[in-house]
Image 1 (cartoon, protein in one colour):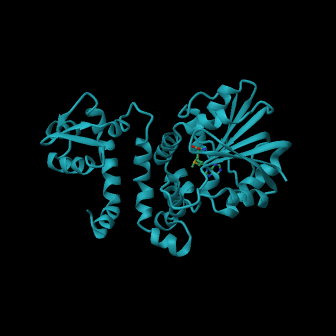
Image 2 (spheres, helix red, strand yellow):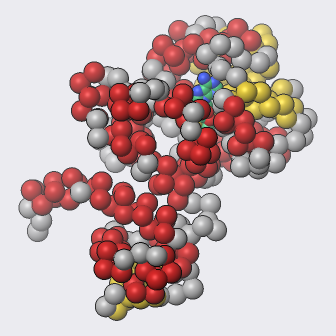
Image 3 (cartoon, protein in one colour):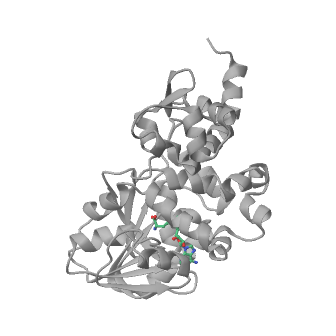
Length: 329
Ligand SMILES: C[S@@+](CC[C@H](N)C(=O)[O-])C[C@H]1O[C@@H](n2cnc3c(N)ncnc32)[C@H](O)[C@@H]1O
């Protein structure tokens, strides 16, 4: 039986596993193992790595279920590891993104815990989305990471809501555009607006999230104003911001929306209790990186109130994401 201190040590080593995953993705190891087991010497030659060092990184990941060491210094890919191959729309870009600047900022989580402010701003000198606007390569990776993180949930949101009564949908902070693409494919009567910062619009224009017919692309700032429409979808955006900033986005929708319009906030609700749930990890990432937070249904209801909206209903989807539908109060 593992002692308490060994278990705590293991938790404290989470950073090593996290970076090791990034390393094997960057080196393309999962693709090299796609055809079957290989020796570390072969993998090191193919990836211009140092064989003993690569072995140690892979040996760390094998007990985590990413590889199987089938013979001395010979590895094969497991089902888990196969999700990291480049032909999979899996989590690889998310792992790469979260282990770059967010990883560095996370070293200052203590600062966030003490102040409630994002460590990212302290470490990088500007807020996350401003910093991304000045770093196009990382902004492009961020958008691909958002696609990776959304696997299944964009389709789930598009499927779960009846867009029949509407004519124009704005995907606010729609980034890569995968949600808008799924909504437009299911609703040929709808026209769409993809609204995001210029870096997000660029990803959508180049088709990162799929086809966007009948779409107007608008680069702008949702804290300033938003385009007029009868339905807004705002997925995984409100969680990036504290209550004051989040209410400002929603208030701008309230100002611009048609009287019979709807605002649909798509987010993962924080469940009560202390069961493990990925959203609790994402919540702390929000604390340290953007200054946002994950919320309960009650917290979203009061956010809508602060913006002159009222929460009508919560629609569950097939994915780990809910749709909070609001109307003018
Ligand atoms: C967490 S991502 C979510 C992207 C997408 N909705 C999804 O679900 O994958 C947040 C998005 O908000 C955009 N964003 C951040 N600040 C913005 C602003 N001031 N105005 C418009 N878009 C903004 C970012 O560029 C990014 O695409």
